[in-house]
Length: 297
Image 1 (cartoon, one colour):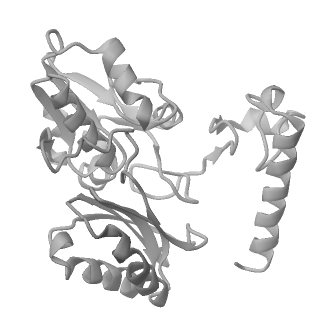
Image 2 (cartoon, one colour; image 1 turned 120 degrees about the vertical axis):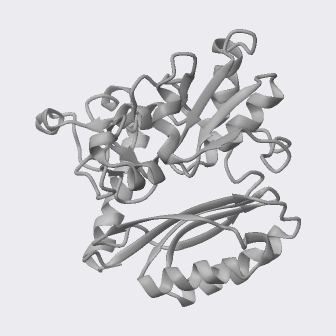
């Protein structure tokens, strides 16, 4: 039985007092020995936390007792190690950075598609399927037939839309992301740009992997997650994948035998493009991580 429960959640909701919520929420999570990262903004909340079953249930109950988060849903997975080093509650302009705080699903949003209906939708010949995640995430795994926008950050997504999609030609567009938040905001943006039928996978890839049996799945590869597990497989179990901390390339077995590979520092893909200062900073960070691990921190 895995020791730690990992809960991912978000909700677009008007939070004019979001700054006042930061300290009480952080203190409550810390008191429950829960770690992770939560973002608060005027447009809502976005977080992934890990802890004991009791601790996670307590934090979720604490959130849902607030009228703003009463309908908050979450996705769960498990690990036999704590995937976070500390508890952070941060204030942001957006809970997911599209670079457009004025666009929010609270005003207008695309059509939610539950995991059970996703295969049928994306198998239609008149539906364009777009992965809204970053390029390195798509390389690790994606849905069959999905378009990779090849962006390094979500705030580049509007440029991709402007250069590659046309409301007059692309009548039906379906989008997805890890937990549902990026594609939900992307649908709000697409509607503003004049697209009429936009769909997004409700609760994202993680809910799809949780609910759709592998033998019926159209998912290919693993799913990148933003914690120390790095990726999870179709059973939401940590997959044995190492990611370069510099360029986010998946480290293949053959890379580790090359002299330009240095664990926790660089890989053969990016080694020639790094400055001496970048390499030294990465080495020091890795050294501090190893010291912290030795102290069981």
